[in-house]
Length: 122
Image 1 (cartoon, helix red, strand yellow):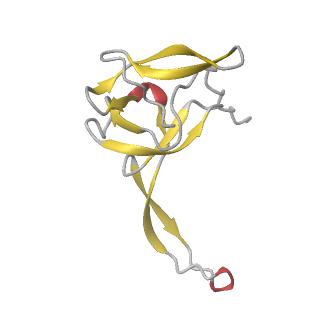
Image 2 (tube, one colour):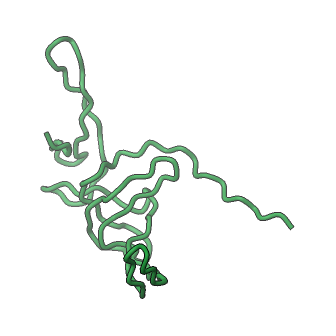
């Protein structure tokens, strides 16, 4: 009997970056706030600090200095289950503004949809 392979998620534009502060809006950790540790654009998932903690059982391996035991670590969460946190408004949706830079170039920046404050750090 063949084992069914898991299909990759539909490619979605992910507006989150590492070090963003996000709030979980659905799922078992609803209401928690954390920092984005990593973004996986292929699967459409984020690793958020102190969110979706799972227990990992590890066997000791003296050759690699692994102690072993039960450790808690973060598990990836779907991008659709989180919202970025604006410093003024709280959880908001993201808009994009094109800023014109010297030399005729333009740069897209992420802004808050409620107050218009820039969400990108310079």
